[in-house]
Length: 420
Picture 1 (cartoon, rainbow, N blue to C red):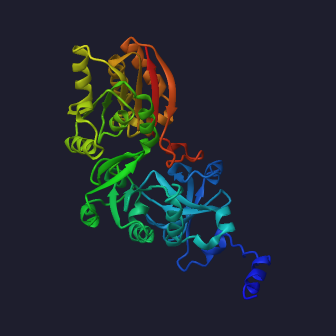
Picture 2 (cartoon, one colour; picture 1 turned 180 degrees about the vertical axis):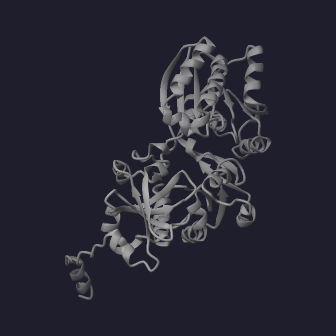
Picture 3 (cartoon, rainbow, N blue to C red; picture 1 turned 90 degrees about the vertical axis):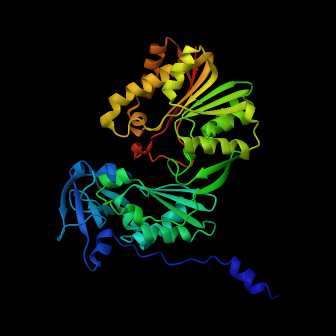
């Protein structure tokens, strides 16, 4: 009988009163200092109402508010009739005038985070651990108990303390490593002169992770955030096709593709990279995974020079992997970068045995978004005197989702070719 009250309570259907709804305009009117309004040009509104988070300066008609907003200030974004469609963070220097944080309909359904970066960060970062979304300019990669924060927007630097406070609430994270993208932040109007002092860290320089059954030593001062998590499924795919094969891994970094090839049964794997720290990590990873060093070797050499030398020796491989650094950071250099991609892939195709496989990658968003990578590869095949067939097209790992309203978020191309 003691359980009866509890059972009765569980059987009741309890309804709460519907929450009172507030519009952005109403919420903004209660802000002590007021909120400036960025008004969009006619015909530009729908793109951002559909979810594109980056309001570029060319879409802005006028700014209402005195004094005018400063970089990092919260502003309303409005249509041509001055009706707010959302709110975001203003930047007077960047080509992206506003980074939208919430749309009007989101505020209407739940106004708890409206015009408050502190509350929004707490909500979004907690959700972003499960699925990256709607925090433009902020990347957080979690490696064991270490969170690596890649900052590429002025607003991220402004709210650094709040972001770190939110991350520290996640119970399994013990360390935070802040990695500002200095060149991009300069373009966003950030004074980077004191950046090194600002971002001093007590975070360990190294950690270890487990991915697809392989242990990796990671340098948290290494490339990107320390590890290329975006190639996870593509590395795993290589392990499935490498049994009995001779494999060449160009621009191998810490040996991700190489280790998966050996795990998949490759007879012999050669990894090439110019970075000595990266190759030291790769060799350490061989030891960590108890791999026979006779089946895998790493050489410090420029990929192009290595391939030219290998052609002179009439060498070839069953599977060739090439994952070069970003050759086209912007659209302005796309033409020149296309030639570099073509030359690299032409050499790689010539080193691939007839009937063999070439996995080729581009992490340049300008290349992926323009859709020219396949044309580049066809041009490379013509240069090499080879024919190619596309067997697989992939992008970044599943935890790198792309919002269809912001196709600029697509950056990685991973193409598997049969070369004959």
